[in-house]
Length: 352
Ligand SMILES: Cc1cc2nc3c(=O)[nH]c(=O)nc-3n(C[C@H](O)[C@H](O)[C@H](O)COP(=O)(O)OP(=O)(O)OC[C@H]3O[C@@H](n4cnc5c(N)ncnc54)[C@H](O)[C@@H]3O)c2cc1C
Image 1 (cartoon, rainbow, N blue to C red):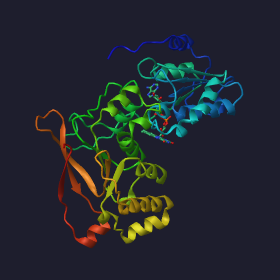
Image 2 (cartoon, rainbow, N blue to C red):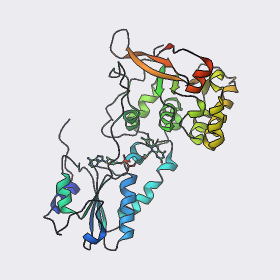
Image 3 (cartoon, rainbow, N blue to C red):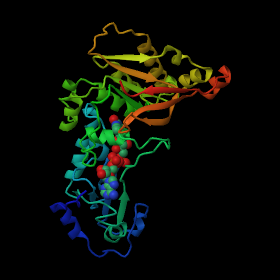
Image 4 (tube, helix red, strand yellow):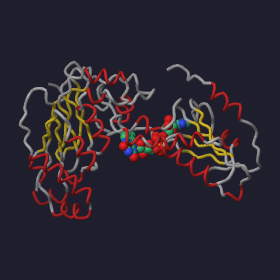
C-alpha cells in the first residue's frame, strides 16, 4: 500500500503542534483542577464515542476547544462503515454529530493516524486532554484449522467492503463460484450480512451501499445462506426487530428445524426473564411453521442452523479456496445431561 497522503486539513493540524502551553499535560483521566482555561482537547477517533465525548466536552466547559482526529478522511466511524446501508434510520445520528462538528470550537482533522502520523506523547504535549476513542478494529479468530483459506472473511471485512470503507474496497469476495454462504454467528451483525446477501438488489440500489458491492451482489450466484449458532433459538443473540426484518424478506424461504425449537426448563426460565429472548423465540417458531407455498427457482433460502460449532475449514478440490467446513454438534449442558447424547461431527458443503 502506498503512503497515506496528507490532505491540506491534515497539514493544518500538524502546524498546530506546538510546545506545551501549560505546565500540566493531561489524559482523559486528569482532574479539572489541574487544567487551565481555555481547555484544549484532542479526541482520537470520530465514531459515536468520539463525537459524544466532544459534545459533552463542548457543553460541559465554557470556551473548551475540541479537535477530533481520525485516520480516515471521513468522520463517523462505524456509523458510516458498520451500520448496514439499508438501515438509514440508524444513521440519522450523524445529523447530531454534524451539529457538533459545526460548532466553531470543534474541528475535525481526517487522514491523521495516531501511532504513525502522530504519537501519543506528541498529543499529550500539545493538548490538555487526550481522549482515545478509536474503536475496536481487529477481529477475533476461531483458532481452528483452515481459517486462513481464501473465501473466509470476518464480518468486519465484509461489512466494511459493502459500506465502502477504504481499507476493504479491494476485498472482492467471491460471490459467483458457489450457491451457498455460511455466516457464523446469529447476532445482529450476522443478520446484516445475511440480509445483504439475500436482499433484492433492486431494493439495495436505493441505499448508500458502495457501487462496486451492489454490482458484485447483482451478479452473485448465492441462493442459500446458513446462519450458524453454537446454541439454540432461545440464546440467539439478535434482537426481534432485526430478526423480523430478515424473516420478512421478499423472495426468501426460511428453514428452521422444528426439533431445534424444543425448549428445556432452563430455556423457559431464560424466556420468562427476558422479553427479547421470548420475542426472538416466538418469531423463529412462527417462521418454522410457516410453509412458503411459492417454491419457484427465483426464491432464495435462509437456513437457521442451531447447536453447531465450527471445528475445521476444508479447502476446495483445487485447493484455491474454502470448499467446506466441519461443524460439531453441540448441546446445552442441561440438555446433554438429559439426553446422554454424544458429540458428533457433521459436514456442510459450501459448494453446489
Ligand atoms: C456491522 C456493524 C453494524 C452495527 N450496527 C449498529 C446499529 O445498527 N445500531 C447501533 O447502535 N450500533 C451498531 N453497531 C455498533 C456501533 O457501530 C459501535 O458500537 C460504535 O460505532 C462504536 O463506536 P466507537 O466510536 O467506539 O468506534 P468506531 O465507530 O469504530 O470509531 C472509531 C474511529 O476511530 C478511528 N481510528 C481507529 N484507529 C485510529 C488511529 N490510530 N488514529 C486515528 N483514528 C483512528 C476509526 O477510523 C473510526 O472512525 C454496529 C457495529 C457493526 C460492526
